[in-house]
Image: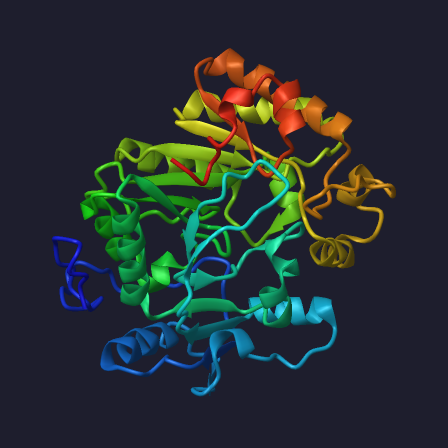
Length: 390
């Protein structure tokens, strides 16, 4: 049902206008071996239709009905954390998410906290440093999820935004990749027009996807900000398996910039590979010569222990990330593990000097950092002006 407070009406079905949403297409780097129909998957004809059309794209995938099981209680019955993780990456779950719109609750760092929403859960890519893999919900059931109650989610956003009555960002990318599954669902063709028409709600979206075909002809009115998670090509090859190349991501950024979207970049986690100063300087030079950005956010590793254990299971205990963290990690108030402050300051300072050579007026901020780091770098004016907010 449309919200009475919105003042405009969006059809409550993805398929009421067949020309509005493209037919499902297979997703690069994702070949589910099993497809689980969780609670709410087949509760009405519209959901059933989308589920059936996506299932047909993966005829080799085993379809399993668990219609009484919520999406976050799907068990893959594997006690080995690494095997469970990869089994989850090969499992697609359909369900519904009744608390998909939330306010982040970071404490003891400079995150301004922000509203975020989840039409998807987790991600089909295989980044070795993934912080999501260590969160409690993902750790139990690390499956790739599509939530079918999209209109409920948008109505929740509408209600919150109207109550706040000021331009407010809603972030898609905190608990998932914001675009990786869009070829399957076509959700962008509903979500972006929703934000375009809304008087207060704005979308910020983070992705590694290079498939932006669904976005290019939409009337977004500048109300959706697109940001890409990026690293140099050699870092992507080593740490971001089964994900689009950085070259393809930059091409996607240029297409979306040409379509008028505000474009941002998140360079995170910065990884101190061999000769990292040159590697990142060359990368930044190419990036800034090709794309005009609205904002760049920098960040080091900032993961919880469970995610770091999984990283070491993937890469071995002597990997470059663990070496950079060191055995005597700082006892930081927010419980996240970070590189020593001296290394972070050296990295950020180097990056900022390169960025200023190419785009002197560009907004530069830091993700999940300490206030003292902003102060040491002369970035106090950038506090609270990072990727996820307006």
